[in-house]
Amino acid sequence: MTLAENGTTAVKPPSFTAPIIQDNPMGWGPCEMPDQFRDMPYQPFSKGDRLGKISDWTGAAFQDKKYASKYASQFGSGSHYAYYHDEDESTFHLVDTTRVQKPPYQRGRFRQNQKNMRGRGGRGGSNSSHVMQQLGKGVKNRDKDRKGMNKKWGQGRPQIKIRDASVTVKPDWVTIEEMDFPRLGKLSLPNIKDGEDIVNCGELEYYDKTYDRVNVKNEKSLQSVNRIFHTVTTTDDPIIRKLSKSEGNVYATDAILATIMCCTRSNYSWDIVIEKIGDKLFLDKRDNTEFDLLTVNETSVEPPQDDGNSLNSPRNLALEATFINHNFSQQVLRSGEKEPRYKFDQPNPFKTEDEEGEVASVAYRYRKWDLGNGIVLVARCEHDAVVQSPNGELQYLTIKALNEWDSKLANGVEWRQKLDSQRGAVLANELRNNACKLAKWTIQALLAGSDQIKFGYVSRSHVRDNSKHVILGTQQYKPHEFATQITLNMDNAWGILRCIVDIVMKQKDGKYLIMKDPNKPMIRLYDIPDNTFESDGETESEDEVGDASAFQTLYPYNNTVKR
Image (cartoon, rainbow, N blue to C red; front, side, top):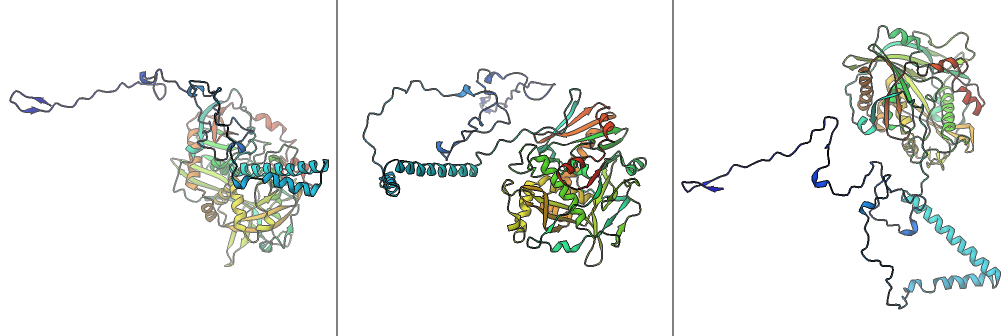
C-alpha cells in the first residue's frame, strides 16, 4: 500500500511474473537442465530397479546371500550418495574389558548338553563323533528353519528363467506400437450385445450324466479316444472365406480372440498374424506352432522351469494337458452308433472323405458382433456337446479338463484329499495358477453362447508317470456367473480387441504381427514384410497333423490334430 496525495491509502495492484517455459516440440519434459539443479548430483535409476529394504527384521543370520545384489541398480553402485566418515574408526578400542555376564536362561546350556551326550556315548572317540553328529543335526535343523523362514518372507525362491519369444523378431520388422498391460487394463468397450448366428455346422453328442457322480472314491480311468480334432486357422476356413464377401470386416476364431482379450493375464509369449486387405482384417495363427497347446501353471508364483527332457518341463506339461483335454471332452459323451446326435443345418466344413478315423464331437457357430464405428466382427466358435436340462431344454456345453501333475512341485493342494470335501479350495488354487487359461476358456464359452462350462478334474495315476490319468470329479458353471467369479471383465476384453483393431485399421495394407513380450507385461505390434512366414506353407503337407507328432512321442494313442 502507498500514501496518496489526498492522504488516503492506495492499494497497489498485485504483480505477476510469468515463469520461463521451455518448449519441447520433439517430446515432453524440459529441454535443458534447470539452473537450480545444474550442480546437484544425480543418480540414474531404472523403473525396473527393486526398492531397497527400509529395515530387515530377520537379521544377518537370514540374509539372502545367493542374491545379495538384487537391490543394486543396473546403472552402478550408487556411490553419488554414499556416506563416508571424516575419521577412520579402525583405531577405536573398547576400554571396558569387563566380562559380560550371561542371563540365567543361557548359563550352562551347552555344558548340560555335553553332560547328556557324554552319558549316552561314553568317552573317547565315540563320544566326540556322537557330539559331532548331534551338532550336525542341529546345523541341519537350523538350515531347515532358515529355508522355511526365507520361504515365508519371500526369499530364497529360484530365479525366474528368461523365457524365449514365440517368434524371432527380424531386423526388418518395424515396431508400430507397444502396449503395456496397465494401460490395456484401463480400456473398456461396454454394451456389446451377444453374437448373432450366421451359419451353424457340425454335429454334437450328448453328455453322459453318469460322470457327474464320479468322485475321488469312485474315480474313472482316462481313456485314449481315437478321434480327429481340426484346428484350422481363419484364412483356411472355407466358411469364413465365403462370409468375408458379404458379412463383417474383421475375421478370427474364438481361440485367437480369447488370446487377445485375455492378454493381460498371460505370462508366456504368443503371437498372432494380422493381414489387412482394404478395409478388412484377418487374424491368423502361424502354421506348425504351439498356439493350440494348453499352458500349465502359467500364472503361478513359481511356474515350471525344468528343462525340455523333464516330464515336468513347460512344453511337456502343455502336451500332457492338451492330451488330457482332448480325451476327456470325448470320453464323457454318450458315443456309439445307436446313441442320438444333435445335428446342425450344415455338415462339418473340415471333414473330408479321405480322412481315416472318426471326427471329434464338435459344432461350429459362425457369429457376428457389432463393435461400433463400422467394425463388425465375424468369428468361428465351438461347442463340445449338448445335454438335456431337467426341464427338457437342450443346452450347449463347453467341456474342459483341469489336470493335476505334482501338487508338491506346483505348490498346490492334494486333490485326492481335498477335492470331495473342499472343492472350492482346489478351484481357487487353479484360478491362481492357471488364471489365463481359465479366462480364455470362459471367453470362448461366452463367445460361442454355451449354456454351461463343464470342468473335469483329472490327475496322474502316479506322480512320475505322465501317460496314465484318472478322472476324480466334474463341476459345471454358467459362463456369465463363472466370469464374475474370476473377475473377468468383458467390457475390458472387448476394449482391448477394439484398440488393436483400430490401430491396425489405420495402417496401410499389408501384414502385421502381435506378440506378447516373453519377459515383460506388454504386447507389441510389428509391421512385417508381406512374404513373412510364407515358407511355413511349403512343409505343411509333411507336417499335416501338427502337434500330433509330439503327442504320439509322449503318449501311446492315435489322437490326431488336423490343420
